[in-house]
Length: 304
Ligand code: PAF
Image 1: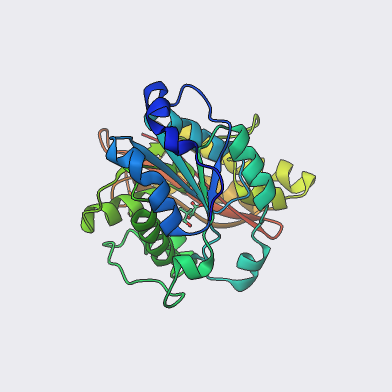
Image 2 (image 1 turned 90 degrees about the vertical axis):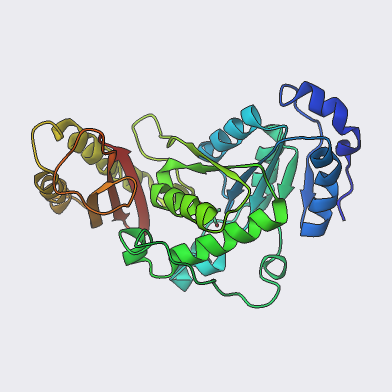
């Protein structure tokens, strides 16, 4: 059971919205405790913003939190390393876990509620994904290389939406395919939550911020800049080359490097299917996954 209750004074907080930072952050492990704590604010009309994470928080997450703080009265951040979205047991075992550091960061950021449920709380019956149909959105790119990944993501996000019951939920564009799948999930299940997309946060040199970056050596970190540089090169070529030729050019850049390219695809943002030509009015992105040493990194940028 959680010890601190600044929410009892919710109306004061609600009046000041997200402008003043509360001194005390609540940390819950049980959905029922979270539900009770949010109940009075919910009844008074507070907008509950939700940022789901797997922890190992970095500036990219904090940026999602800041967006959530700007648009909500109460921000809930969850930390849960979801086993059903890993299709590789060593990836799950090696995923960085830094709960104390994460809590300190959230506290410093003025987050009101951290939700860190146990596996039993999230999966009370069986640790398994539900079946969903996403009209092919989950079969390309990440879905093709990480079978079952998006079913695990959709299962856990749906479960968190049930436990947190947010009005708004915030997702980063770095995981653009995930974002589109969550949007599809919300639509097909008629879930009462609005999805907000937040642009990718990058290091000064362009590396997309990711929890996995913590696993990179200094040298791999430098080498990984090829990802962003290639995406930027691709963007600069849109007016001059076909999608196919640009994909070929990106592959050539990786061929001479220490990084192992897994896929590169130029796709329609809506259906995530590859495009054969650029069309004004059809939002199009380039997506890429590559290994720097043992670390798998993904990134994407908007082309048109
Ligand atoms: O993007 C992530 O960190 C995860 O896929 C999410 C949305 C928290 C679900 O586990």
